Length: 121
Picture (tube, rainbow, N blue to C red):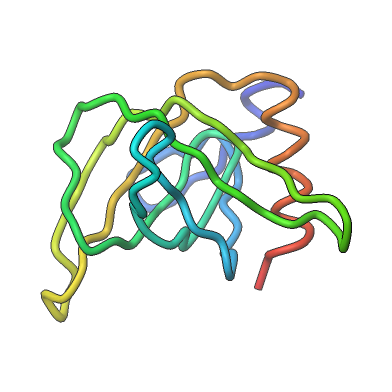
């Protein structure tokens, strides 16, 4: 698919891939196992996470997202992601964190597509 076909205008921002709201997906630090937060939306290019701690902007994170594809098939999506922004939520009880995926592989794309299919609102 050509990048032009994947792009969509959102305000002044141009997105490379469509975002999907998802439910029941958590993200963890790959090495530490520490809970980073809950995924709010997900695309082939990145994700929005809400968490209890801020992440330093421009840091590279090794993350893992566990999900159950069906009754007997538990999967893990491991990604290298750059924190592109991190702000306090409106109620100041959590942080909204934007991640950009740095290693978009075909396998990653297929897993994200399956996750969106299973967990979209």
